Length: 252
Ligand code: PGA
Image (cartoon, rainbow, N blue to C red; front, side, top):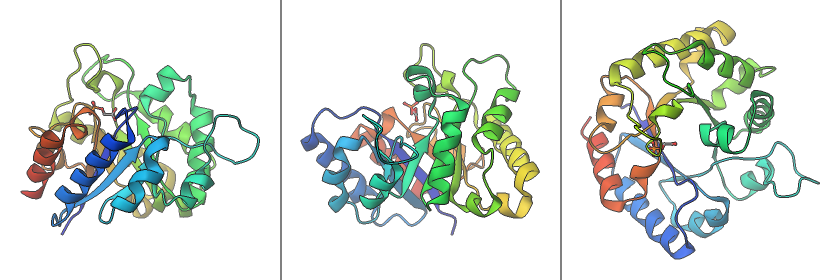
């Protein structure tokens, strides 16, 4: 049975450790007994140690990482995260690209460090603006720059999330891409990765969709859109809504 990857990106939420515990317990409860989904909670750094003991079926994820430890004030390194039990790390989220000035060369360093050290790297790519219905060259450039110097053997730890910035729920007039457009993006991304590493290696790279995914549309991205999973922001913060989303996926 195919297992869909459902990544809950908590962003800078919730406000307290008590709320984080409630949210983690709820996700864990809802995912238990669900056979066709693999859930990851990408929590803020401050809650990772608190929620780790609560997660049995759900994997622990982080929203960012630094590529080395040592004298890097304010950073959290991949090895610190790995030591804490983090299995998945997001890299290149559009909010980090726009809010924190992360560039492709920075994202490339993060991706190399994660992949080489056996941490699943969730590389986020997507257009900043909606210029046309077609997926744009911007995505190709982001992927090629992020994977510079990445060896084929490391690709098994890669996940690519297609998440156009304009589709993220917090944006003005945000709306998700259609499942049909998500499928086009899926094919396009596969083609780029196949061009770099060949078809066989590419088959092992899950391609997921993010941007205003909710309980009403998640299923269609996985079925019509043929995506391998979804990256969920806002909808994973409301217990009822996220429960409904997981339930919708369980009916596939
Ligand atoms: P959203 O966020 O589901 O609130 O659109 C997704 C993300 O930014 O990862």
